[in-house]
Length: 273
Image (cartoon, helix red, strand yellow):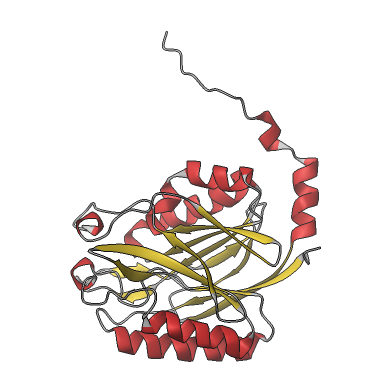
């Protein structure tokens, strides 16, 4: 039987735009510092595109293959050293002549046990992710040690359908790993809480902090939210870790008493009168 008390750590950081080697070194140091600080952790999470920063023109030069990626190799090493499962944010994954915005999931033994390719690509307001990145085709739940975690990246948060399918598939925890702009703080705070509340699931909402290449800023408001919308831990604009020990049994009890999903209708056909 899977244990129900789970220790979560999310590490917020500022990427150096387009500097893969520096970002790998920085994240290695941040992971070690926070794992030493918080002790025995079950799951660690990193933000979207920490290897390159949110800068679409830098995506090609910072691309790596999954098999040879230095970023993934570093995460494997940390996972084995500290005996922790890592949801590795995302890196620019080169597959043939295509690039994907990919989250690698690494177990305590340093093995990549799952990957998720970002399903929805943000290409508005001067951004052009879809000019470089190929969209993933499926949502992915990573099941580790009996815990089911539904994976999403940044812009995915605006599509509640994916999270509803995760909940229906038995997800215990939802995660969104992002590089989210400060200009849309209200959207971030509202959407992440909504995904937790409407699906009665724990939510790890993690984003980068720091300046972007065009002079705008990442938000840096990472949170761990419970199944009822309560923020268990959060961080402002600093680099660092947020931590929570969650109790899945409490969540299961809450779901059993408030059976919202049983009220979903098979069809919501709209009638215009």
